[in-house]
Amino acid sequence: MQENFLLPLIIALPLLGFVLLGLFGKRFGEPAAGWLASLLVLGSFLLGLFLLLQGGAKWTLAEWLPGIPFSLNLDNLSGVMLMVVAGVGFLIHVWAIGYMHGDPGYSRFFSYFNLFIAAMLVLVLGDSLPVVFIGWEGVGLASYLLIGFWYQERVNADSARKAFIVNRIGDLGFLLAMGLLWSMFGTLSISELVEKVEAGGYSFTTLTLAGFFLLIGAIGKSAQVPLMVWLPDAMAGPTPVSALIHAATMVTAGVYLLVRHAFILHGDGFLAGLIVAIGLLTAFYGALCSLGQWDIKRIVAYTTLSQLGFMFVAVGVGAYWVAIFHIVTHAFFKALMFMTSGSVIHALGGEQDVRQMGGMQKYLPATHLHGLVAAFASGGLVPLAGFWSKDAILAYSFEFGPWLWALMLLASVLAALYSIRWYVLVFWGDYRGKAHPHESPAVMLWPNHILMGGALGVGFIGLPYVIDYKNFIEPFLTKAIGDFPHEKLPVVTEWVLIIISAVVAIAALWWGFRFFQQKMPAWYERFQTAALQGFYADAVYNALLVNPAKGLAELLFGGDRGLLSGFASLGSLMGGLGALLARLETGALRFYLAGLLLALVLLVGWGVLR
Image (tube, rainbow, N blue to C red; front, side, top):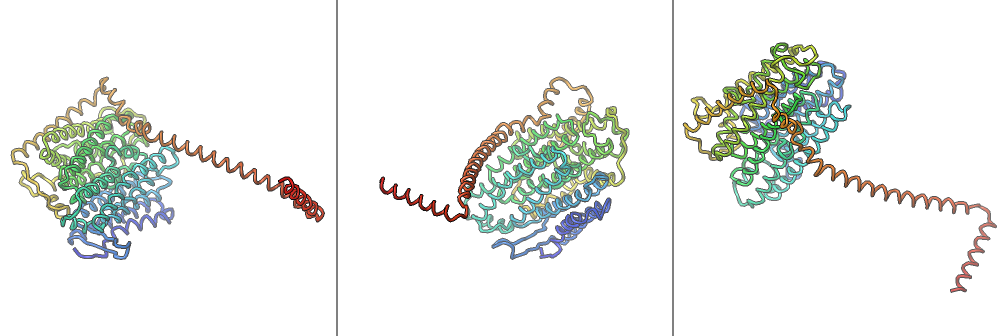
């Protein structure tokens, strides 16, 4: 892998779009601003693909911070992530050209969008942790700007602040991890850290603690339990923002961070068990919450939580390449799911309540096809993309423990149910609203056509070994992640697991298709009441943390206000005394002589009396 000056250009292209559109966006106007932003992201994708086909690239600015170079690395792992970020990101940009049509902040939106892509590219290409952290904070800033894009409404601004603040908790973990790794190894270069960990001679306890802090960072960015509360509120932004954050960029950053540092995590039983527990809990939490939502975007947002839980479980059981494989398949079907939802919202004039939808297959035939494929891929229907990556996670879970496989199989049942529920409520039955639905323009349909192709076929790059077909992605990623020992399941066992997974997905999708067309029974309505509120996670946070913090802040503010009032009163007193004394400054000599005489008498009198 050679030094190549073209590597930073991958980041510079969308960064240039951010600057140009930020300064001169109104001059570009609509749709030129959207096409400029889109083509710059496409340029990053094509340049990254070119360098990846050349075997990768490195670029280093040695004199950056004392002992810490600014280094970028395009290897197989960061290359796959770059293809997802810039490739799917380009399609979302193009789709947004149609979706954001007529918005007063059109150019500002695409400026922020380019900033988001640039920051994410810094994150995935960074070869030293401080560089990664720049991208890490950059996507946090860009998400704040985009979630609160329609800041005129208070709820949108509050949602942006919530996402920003919750993610700062994870950022603290990232910073602590960097401090520990620097104290242990004297470097924050990821490439050098790999070599030093392989060489040994360090404290395993301290390395575990560093891995734990990295996990805290990943939990915040990938919205895992207990820091998951920001992600559903991120739906306050425009739908393209939801698609970009949830499918291709920000929320997958935590998974990528863990996979990039697999050399720290692998073989550590404590961290493995903790990651599995967090991922499993998040997979169930997100799935159950999704089954209770009425907002079309929040339904899909909670499905993202669930799928991220699957990725964390993959990392915990040592299936690092599978976690990235699921990121790839998820990017296609989740972006398709969000953008299909956006097309429906666009067709209904901004309506987001699925109770005002239904029957969209009659009015939006192309969008209906997109939604059908997205639902089936998300639900794990064989042979769509979501099935193969989910099945690989189940297989590794079985090796970890049959109990984990059983629980993950149940989570996959819930995935099938929330996917088909979304489809039925939006596209099946009779239309329940009052708008006049219309199909999306070509600029919105064609990106979804391409995503649909990916949701159908991208899973074939990672077929299980028992199928007589080459698995492309596993050996490709293993070169960058590391070849950790792994014993494959017996052929018969693997086939049995594949068949069970396929049959269970088909059965769950069919049962859900029939169930969600009926009137909901009383038990489901009770469940839905709790699920609609996210099982009161926000209420718990408010009771345990937010309200006590507000009470303490008000108390301290009251103390400050009282102290300041006291100082203000003292100032008024001194000012009044000064005004009184100022009156003694008459300028008359006889008045001053009389004063001196009086002072002399008082002084003599004090001396006599003493």
